[in-house]
Length: 380
Image (cartoon, rainbow, N blue to C red; front, side, top):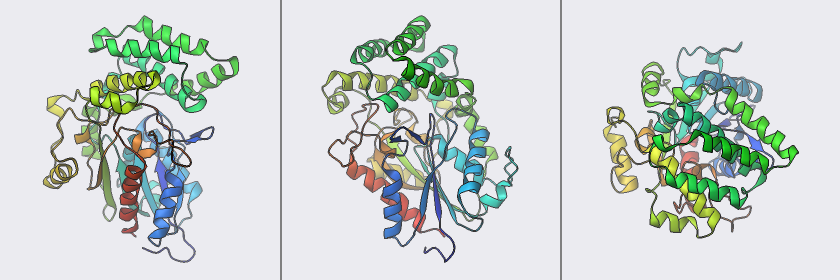
């Protein structure tokens, strides 16, 4: 595929749950933009890569409207469009391309959808995730507020104070059931986090968390039951190539703890990953997706055996992720695929948020995004 004179293919990267374009110098798609442009150029495609400013936890319709408006403002009326969505961003892409979709905007979705050439979903919950269902509970909403604060604090200001991480780690390792969650302790941890900040940083963090807490319509929409309805009403667009990248992290245990690193910060971070992984492993047996033969074959080939209903990348069940052609399978956690993994020797370095101990490194990152580039370049 070679772009014609006067047009430039646009690849839109769509963030997922808790998504953002950038926070300070940190970008959601860490190292992705430049690498993908480079790989597309190597395949004869001079593409422009754009990260979409999304709404972290707003509903799918609101997020997809933001995606449509971004495309209209960034790409010309004749330019080919390619969508790559991470996590929930993959659902945004599918909704925009769905024939007859109705969005809350003055722009006609069809004017953009008809120019979409290919959609790639990365670690996307096509059949839902138990993590979303958990966060719809009263206690889950409190934990969501705390985890969003921890995430945004870490991404913007660096590592949390070790004293705070140790308290959170002790909390996470005690929990083996939702009944064990203590709402007052969650409130205390949140207040303690804010208390460790200067006034300027506290105001900045509270502002970011406010956006998350104001609109949480996304949570119930990502439950397995809701995605069943979404899939029944959201059809693939004829002529568009659909591909998916599938991720899986080994169950947390001694081996993953050792891989995560021996320093206290990494071990506490690993305990947080273990907690979220436990929630993600609870897909109801009545909601286990029925895979096609092609999907089963691709997963068996990629992972050596078909993943079980308990397997996930720590956030999204592995069996929930296939859609269209399976382009690549990887052992990695939910954020490894977009560049958030531990590889300090690379220039510029990669930094991890949750230490899952997957062993995912730069060569794995490059193999994944080369597979995506190859698929996109095949569709014009």
